[in-house]
Image 1 (tube, rainbow, N blue to C red):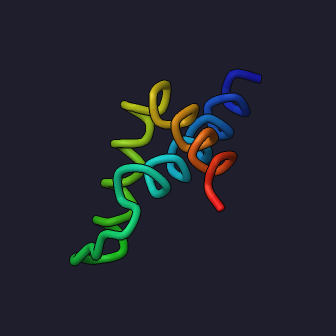
Image 2: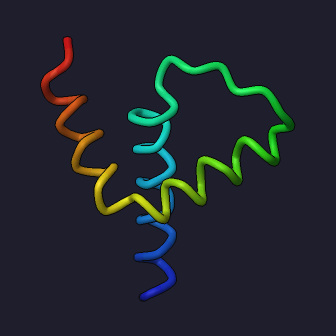
Length: 61
């Protein structure tokens, strides 16, 4: 059960990092580096980024 929760959290954190920190940015590098960078940043800051990204989606046009 814990693994399922971690996978869901990781997916939401990856999405939230893309919606907040990396929104409207051009990233240069390999797909592996870009993916891992967003994933690590998302996991580390997910507690903050997930609510911010949800609020941003709710209040945007």
